[in-house]
Image (cartoon, rainbow over all chains, first blue to last red; front, side, top):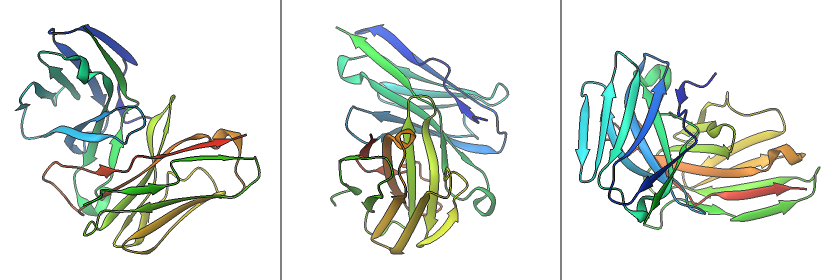
Length: 116
Length: 116
């Protein structure tokens, strides 16, 4: 039972356009969400995060939107660049350290290809 | 800081052999995580430690898998006996416990395991 789902295995976008990566979750106890980016032969690296008390967080070209009622978050990349081509993982952390610790639950990832 | 260091980077072994993967977390980080990446399930948490103590090993596939953290600077993941279905990329990550800042984890570069 996957608690964090990324239903699009891959996405192809033209350079300069917007990339939108989506993520759905099922556990209402998740209170912190993160996006990681992974290049081939490297480990994932942190990209951007959002607390459940917010609905938007922006960092340069990257913006994460959170819709708690729909249990849905998305990552927008504007404008997309060829160097953004990578695997993007959505991750979530549960509220309450005693119950959930500080472990992250990851989705299966979405492969983004930005064409020049 | 050299980051999270994993060894070996690649491991090819025959079915039935014992495999040991190693991880050195970032100095000062008190949480350590072992993840496995597969095409079907993305990043799966196998086990994590807080202050060298195993907290949650519910993701360990079966008794063939074991993990230890004898001190704050070293952890091993052992598979004995290995099977072809264990072939995957294994990641180690570390973080500050109860980190709420949003940096999440720092991942190592992974060990690509192939069991033939």
